[in-house]
Image (cartoon, rainbow, N blue to C red; front, side, top):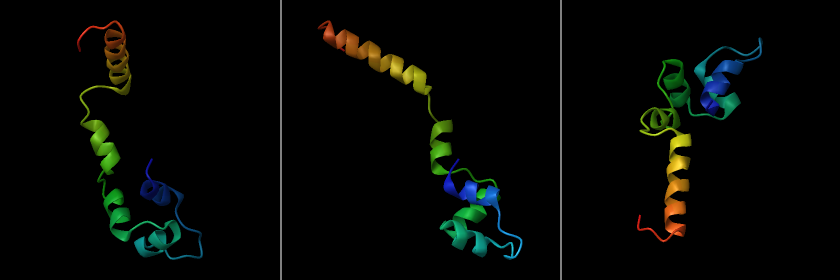
Length: 76
C-alpha cells in the first residue's frame, strides 16, 4: 500500500478538521495525490503491476532458465 493510501486509511485525530489539506500536512503527501487515491486512482506502482505480462514467479523462472542455459554454453 502506498503512503497516500495509508494516510487516508489512518485518518486524523478527532480534534483536527477532516480535510485533504490536514491529511496532506500530517502525512507529508501531496494534496493532489491524496485526492486522486480517495477518488480511486491507482498509484503508478499498482498500475505497472497490473500491466505486467508475467508474474514475478514466472520472471524468476525465466531468469533461472536463461542463466542455466548460459552456464551450459548454449546460446540464449
